[in-house]
Length: 282
Image (tube, rainbow, N blue to C red; front, side):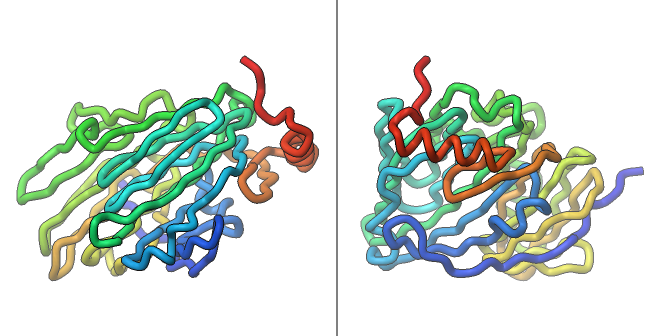
């Protein structure tokens, strides 16, 4: 018999200032990393005031992680030490594997009305892949498949498989699933979730009920173990992210944009960054 996933805990995060003065809501982060393993951090950025985001995130390093940026509205300009340059717009995803080291910048831009809204998720890499070659994937909106189910349900598949349809982000070490789900008002939705995987949902439109727990917009619900998720939209249409991945169960040494397994590895990474040997030669 399938075991339903219920809510372990609700997180509403806190307002943070990051980068060169970007105002965002950190839904979970450093102190909750052990609960969300293999995920490290989830930021929600949303504003119609350009002064909240226009200074962006100037050049900075990453090592040992993957960063996944999903633009719901607006755009973000990107440049990195691999020579990648581009603009991700509404509905686009940037999946960056920092691996052994990458230096990049992210400069958010609003739409024609000055609105900018999206999420950035950090996923950890296991010790065996901390120093893998960096890679960058720019996934355009039209490359993200949609699956439409009964009653008007629509699922955008960024990573994972739904009804035999595969998302474009493949070959990811932690075997994640990343879905953007739209539910009409009062519509129920069920989805298998691998037993043993960490899973959470974050609602950004309407509201949901998971068993006897309501999840409001702007909240993250960490799910208990089980193998199937049942949710229902409330009086208004709902839209939410469903994310899951295989826990690493490894020690974390984390400072700023670099996440390793030991303090010695962390110190070596910052020393390499300071002395100009951070970027590994192919």
